[in-house]
Length: 113
Length: 116
Image (tube, rainbow over all chains, first blue to last red; front, side, top):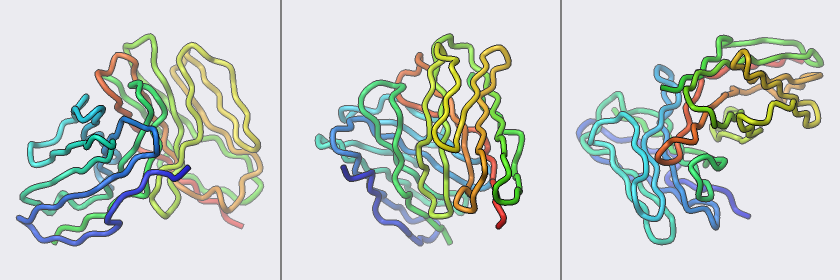
């Protein structure tokens, strides 16, 4: 079974721009979660989608948003990029329950100049 | 609120040594789940183990073993006879059953360096 895939793997943007990251979950998984990893803050939860609905949200500004499609694929968008948004963005998928094991993709490394 | 602490930020061992990575957690929930993930230099988080709060039985998988003690809120990870390929950052994580959705709270991670 194919794992979680994320595109693109690397991205360079400038301040003020916006960016969209994509995540395809493991086949059959209906929950997709997003995490931000930075050297200073570590791994932080952004949000989670299940059946096209945001089920949980972390403590991030409204510039960070996401959505999920009917095939469970998910996208996250960051608008008005700031230097501090430079990070590894990890997507994870799981079956259904809130405590099912999450399986992670390889991440998208975003650099904001 | 839930919290996970990995006090060891970096550990360096020589190949074939045993090494234990510590994890201490805080939660008010009575039902919760604990996880360990490995992050090699490539960046992907690799799932290692999932343990629920009602199962305190220790687990062994090859050279890996886990010790879960609710009395001390700890979920420690031991690698026996370490190998260079074990070099990575290891994360302990917690998920509470009363979460509205799926959310992991991670510790700060422990960087393990295994030298030949």
